[in-house]
Image 1 (cartoon, one colour):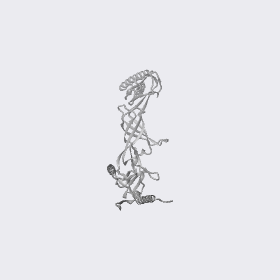
Image 2 (cartoon, helix red, strand yellow; image 1 turned 60 degrees about the vertical axis):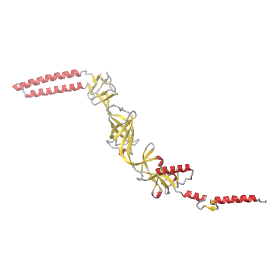
Image 3 (cartoon, rainbow, N blue to C red; image 1 turned 180 degrees about the horizontal axis):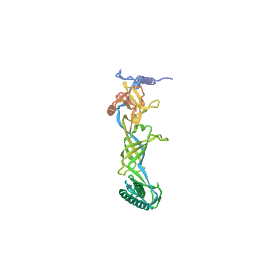
Image 4 (cartoon, rainbow, N blue to C red; image 1 turned 135 degrees about the horizontal axis):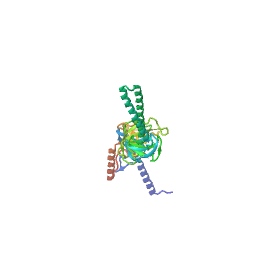
Amino acid sequence: MKVRASQLIALGILAAIGGWMFTGDLVIGGQVDPNAKTIAQREEAEQAAIFRVRVQALQPQERPNLLAVRGRTAANTVVTVRAETGGIVQNRPVEKGQSVKIGDLLCVIDKGVRSTTLAQAQSTLTQAQEDYDANVRLVERGFATRTKLRGLRTALDAAKAAVASAEQEMGRTEIRATVNGIIREPMAEVGDNLSPGGVCVTKMDTDPMLFTGQVSERSIDQVKLGMGAQVQPISGSAMPGKISYISQIADASTRTFNVEIEVDNAAGTLRDGMTAEALVSLPSTNAYRISSSWLTLADDGQIGVRYVGDNNVVGFRPVSIIAEEAEFMWVTGMDAGMRVITLGQNFVAAGETVDPVSPEQMKQIEADRAATAANGTPNSANGEERS
C-alpha cells in the first residue's frame, strides 16, 4: 500500500503533539520554559501537599451542674383524725377542701349519758367536800379523830377524780384540729355511729409541699441534705426548695434512691400529686463546650476528638460526655489550649502532618479565594482543606 506524503505529515504532527503532552514542556519562541511543570510533576506535588484543617484552641469553662429529677408533689403530712370515744355524729361543721387551723371544731358526738355521769360526779364531789370541811372543824374542836378525817380526804380525792374523768369524757365528744391542714376524704357523715378510733375527718398539710423523686445510684453521692433546687410543676412556674430527705436504701427494681424536696407553699399554688421536675444545683465543674460535629470515632470505637499537637501532627484524645444541650455538649478529658480539629477531622489520621488554620484565618483564605475567582486568576493558595 502506497503511503501518501500528507499522511506522513499528519503522523509526524501527532507524534510531536503526543511528545509535548507527555513532557509538558512549553516552547515559547523556540525556547523551553524552565519553570513549567509536567502533568506528572503537578500530580506528584498535589499529592505531597499538606492538608489544611480548621482548628480551634479550647479552654475549660465553669459549668453549672444541674441534676434533673422527675417525680411528683406530695402533701407534707396526711393526718387521720379519729374519735377517742364512741357515739353518734351529731354535727360535722367542716366540708371537704376546707382549710382548718389548730383548735377548729371538726366533729361533735352526741353526749348521751355523759352529761348525766358528769352531773352525778359533780354532786358526789360537792357532798364529799362538805363532809370533809365539817370534819375539819370537828377535829379542830376535839370532837372527831384524825383517822376519820383521813378517810373523808380519800373520798374527796376520789370524787374529784371522778369529775375530772367525766369532764374528759365529755370533752372527747368535741373533736378539734391539732394541726393546720385541708379537709379531705375519708370523713364521717352526720348520723354515723363512731366507735373509739373511728375516722372523723382526714387532713393534709400542704405547706410546705414536698416533691418526691428518684435519683440514680450514679448521681446519689453528689446529692446532699440542704442543697437548693428549683421545682417545676407541669402546670406552673418554677419554685425554690431544698432537699430535706435522702433515702439510704435503693429501690430493688430500679436501683434508685428516693429524695424529697421541701417547697414553701403558703400561697397554695402546688397541689398534691402533680407531675413535676426538680433541678438540683450540684457543685459546678470545669468542662469543655464543643459542637457534637467535632466528635469522631477511633479505630477501636472510642469516642473523642482529633487535635493538632506539636509539629502540627494529628492526635486523637478520648473524651467523656457529661451533659448535652440543643447544639453543644460538655465533655471532659481534654487539655487546656488543645487545638481541636473542627473541620476535616474525618479525613486525617493520627500521626499525619497537617496545615492547621484558625477560624479567622479560614475566613481570610475564603475571602482571598473569592477575590481571586472574581479576577479570573488561578488560586495560588497552598494546602487543601478536606471537609
